[in-house]
Length: 406
Image (cartoon, rainbow, N blue to C red; front, side, top):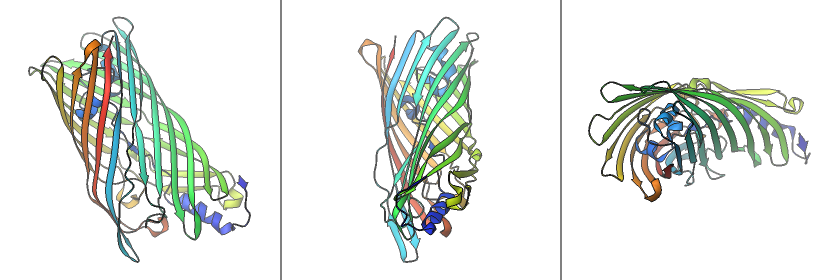
């Protein structure tokens, strides 16, 4: 630890320790499913109907349906918005976070090695969050800024058992970065927490053709434990800190039906074990100065379901039209909701298209509109949380991609 100005009091450092312990540190962000244009357009209902290299994320066992080499790359543009009404001792105040666009990218490459084996590599953002408020907003003692970025590199192999069954397994190498800022009472400077980590996990998948033009996809993604190391600082004070964050396992099952000419219709259900994020413990490198070696805050998130439905229609030889719907349940426990993450169940409507260009290139585009359920949260004065209403929450999502089969 380095102290550059000893005029600050020990009480201010104890306030820093309190703020670290009281709720904060991250959260595990929320999951991003904007990992391909087609996946966005179809509400993620693609597990049994691979169309390109993006199946490395959707269902890596689907690589065995891709002859030769396949490439897909693009990005999503995500613009969240909401209104927040905070009941402070001075009266109710309305506020909206700063308007920002976030651009998570994605890229996939699949290579057929022989008649049975395919290898692939995926790069995408599985988690992310960005919320920024004015430095003097009423909830500043809980959160002024939250920035979370995660990036996955997933080498994957798929094996074709027979014409009906394929299996796949892969490794997740996940980089995780977090920045948190909040105010401290009676201290002019913000508390800033910055840290990063690399964690490892795995994936397993199955693709099975069923009678009656049905196809089943199953995908498992393991937990990824991130041992985040970084610094917590207030003005001239900088304190080393570390904490463990377990990002959840998920289980997905999807069916696709292609028995109607020119149509593909699908459904998917995903169960995510957010209860693994039950608490956050921070350890400090100078317990003598802070008066404690560690501090724990309770999160108690819930396991949740996400349901997606999608359909695509082959308009002509070049153009495919797509539409989808998603219902996504909120993992945040009402007793522990705060300003770091917007709570509430989500409904998502989506549209998209793919168009074959010259040279075996395919352009994909998607638009989605997310609607967030209005939520009230109860006060927790020790954590800087007032009685609060979250209303008019929505998110605009745009995506574009290019794909090529070699």
